Length: 440
Image (tube, rainbow, N blue to C red; front, side, top):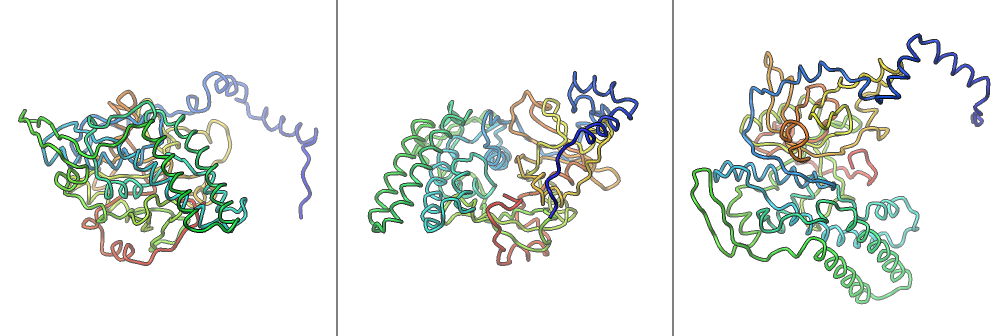
């Protein structure tokens, strides 16, 4: 076994000599200290080659804004639905309530959390899985299947019926309250199990805990309506109204979508291709749509993405937005920042290696709405983000082909646009992944 290495004066002297041996060291130091690494290493030619014109583009409207929250996964899911509504019913800029989805997601996640705590009550408090559940008790991030499960169970409503509140636009306060509450309750449930309490007592206690969660959510988000009146004026200025709709009636009558027909196609080279994987630790609704990934090489993912866009259906995509991205201008290019050239340091890692070391993560979900072909091959893609109109071009981003290949991991595709090979993968018995897997 190697002994611990002590940083010595001799080592520091060599570090210094190596630093100053680069003739431009002081010039670069001044530039980086004043402007930062990104601004100093940025390639201005990127904005020129990421031209905002696309050979195939689906007409969409104004972007939404998740503000200070991690709700991108639900925004991207609702975006794909509202695009369908706008096309079918000729209503530009129609928006669905993200607050409604978030309310029920908080309730369902708390319910799932208490189930997981009871299921692991025989394990040590510091067991890795128990620790994972406690650490992620009230995350506002999520997967496509989380939103799909809520929609299939509770339906959807227009944004005007249940608009965002302070607590959905900034989830910090309510997350702090729910996290504290659920962790406190987790200890109570574990204690009841250890004390051999009866199932009736445990369930009564659990029911009261869920009631407390509901109360906190109702105060923060408002109670969801049981029924509402649908009113809108279409693009031909014709007025439409239907009274006393339930959220599920609205969903089934106005959206010709069965979310069970969709597959999350994944490019995760740290996992074996041709396999179906599941992540039960992140499922949020008991009996809902499970989180599953059909893992394939990137070119096969891209093939079905183009097929779905060609049929004018926008696509939920999961990616690592923290990499090589200019938020203000809405640019995503794998060569946007040249850190290696600037710093003289090798940063080479493959997509597989980044996933294996958790340097790569699915940090964001967006909506893919178009692409541009040159000589039959895509060179850039149009993205609808959920960061409001002040970022990008009225909220729309442009993504280079190399960024798409390097930093996109998931695309949600309707089965009718899949190849036979991916359909067969989707029909496999899934391989269960650990809670801390790179795809979480």
